[in-house]
Length: 371
Image 1 (cartoon, rainbow, N blue to C red):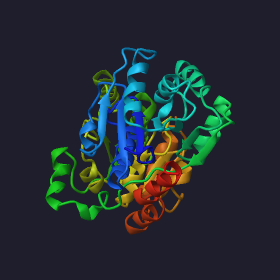
Image 2: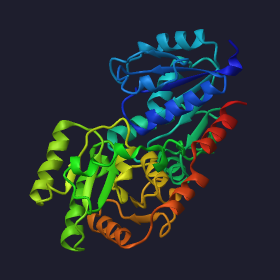
Image 3: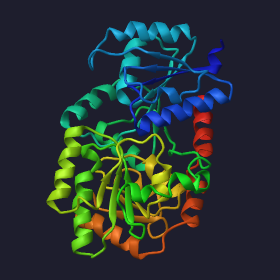
Image 4: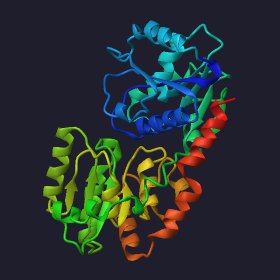
């Protein structure tokens, strides 16, 4: 097996998430081109592993705890047996483990793909500060947007690296209204108790505190009581049961239980985009949202909090509006403006196709990694 055709991809695990979906799409792409990607997971969470191309060599070498160095020898042995000198790491933890495993091997070329930006705690910040110290001048750091690059370089004092900015992209054919059978979504509003003539604001995101679902509920209360627009809020995604219960109690507090709907995690979100009118993200931490791209592919106007790459992925007044993070009134105001506008349909989808297709993203990664 030629080293030029073999690339090792390392990730923390395969839970349902954007970074995991990204890795699967890149690995499958290289596989189709005739390269030999191998994948290492550092966690037993294999929710999405089945989406890997069957030809991909996959192994799970689970860590017992965050700083479990017992995995180093196993990971090094596996990758060496695959005869590759290129290691593509998703986020800082997998990069840190690989750097330790290959500390004295100067022939290995590292790629660090960063899918998070703002640290959610001081503990996370300090860990990242440690992990980033393992970067050297031959490592390639791949940012998802210019805002992320500027923030991380300043926050963690990054300078001595090879840099690239490659925006996320998604499959324009799969995320296409024409890809759906009408029977898949005809009765969907009825299933969730939403009248057929009422508007839906959809939020597709893992239900974690940093995604700002609480702010979305408060914003819906403002939309109803201040702006007098009685839209529904559809949360598509899974999360911790206790946190979801807290959100449902918040909905009850505002008497919004009939206007806020939870779907749990979904393997196929397209039918939910099809029945919706506005896509929103109310996150306080986001980098370059794949879900927002999916929504634009369905022609949905986007109301995004102005963090990460939100201002780089859309044109205000053309594909949507930005709002202030941690500001439910600003979020509600953006929803109200979009509901009053005619931002929808083919122009938004065409903007997505021209700028954020998976073909463009794949080409950029191929040019970077295969040299």
